[in-house]
Amino acid sequence: MEIKKILCPTDFSEVAKKAFEYAVFLASSQRAELVLLHVVDQLHGFENYEVLVLSPQEISERMEKQAYENMGSLVDQIKSAIEIETTVEHGKSSVQIIEKAREVKADIIVMGSHGRTGLSHVLIGSVAEAVVRHASCPVLVVKDMYQRPETL
Image (tube, rainbow, N blue to C red; front, side):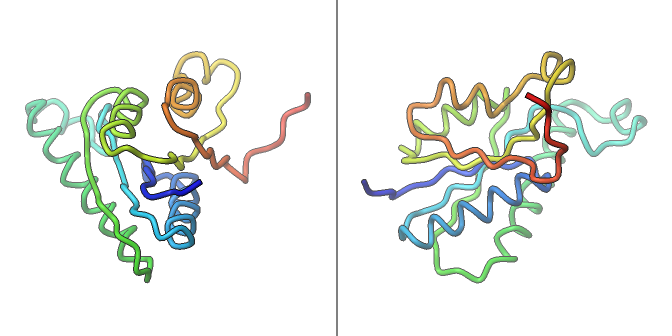
């Protein structure tokens, strides 16, 4: 089996950074191209007053600009000869990840999971779970290593 293209979605969390490290290692070892994706789907990183005075378009543009800056920082941290494409999409995270994987013909998706359980899982949902269920390629899920283990 040959891996030519890897999709790595990121929300810039610590677990997403770990998944990025796995994706970079895999891309290096397989001489594959890495597509780094961020999906803008909610208002984060804004003060309450900013949401009131900025138009939805301005907020979206700022979030996209910040995402590209954050992805640039991630890419700058690695000293690798792999080819990396960065992209930002808008919409529901799981849907956009699945669509981008199909669009770029990803051989594998490498992504982090916050490992939410219980009520927070029900209310927030699991992007990783939705991607695993609906992706047309294999998905490597990197779990949050610092989360307390649950009893079975």
